[in-house]
Length: 99
Image 1 (cartoon, one colour):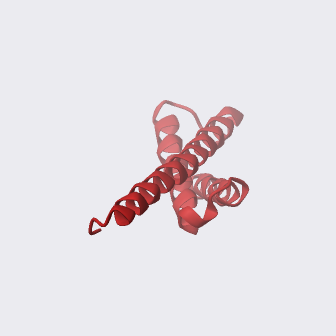
Image 2: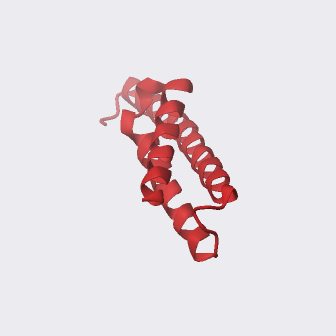
Image 3: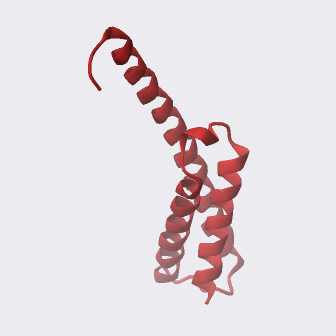
């Protein structure tokens, strides 16, 4: 049950970063949320295997911080890469090359 709460926390953080960071038009709405969810699940399972329990406060802090960093990182990275790819395509189209 706690894994579900951790996953929901990662998804919520992903949605927050999608709308809080610039470049929303360059990525899908679910991209950051999905990445945050996956990061939260993987980190939660790794911490449980390492011996931490759901009653420990640190498992929640570590899990949500890592999910937030992953969601923020993929949000910024996807925006930068998409804008660079769009610029490169526009330059190719202006030169007359086929897409």
